[in-house]
Image 1 (tube, one colour):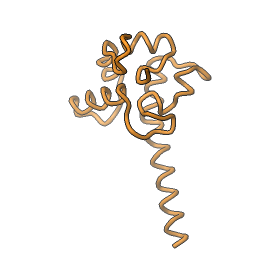
Image 2 (cartoon, rainbow, N blue to C red):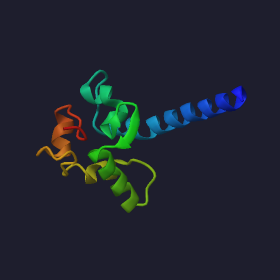
Image 3 (cartoon, helix red, strand yellow):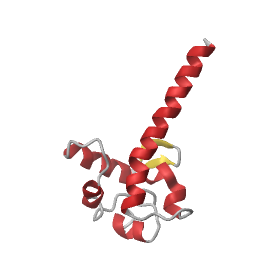
Image 4 (tube, one colour):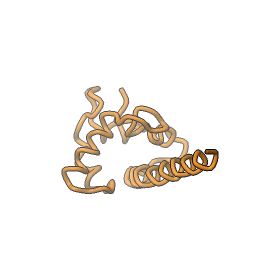
Length: 108
């Protein structure tokens, strides 16, 4: 039983590490996110409701819908550009403007 729990825990950690790199790295590279900035600290919270992941926020949902429409499993510069003009969190500010100001486009 302990062995099964250990295996499941390891798989969960590996899965989280893989998805962290698949989405946070392209976002950071595209928008030149500085270490220690608000967006860097938000980590998974740029697209999810918490910094550790969980349910997608508005920005994450917009990215996911665009990825689905493009039949892509990768977060590409093209996909990110397609949601820049949206206001994913409904606060009256476009995603790209929030990103430029080091504000999370998925959090009000």
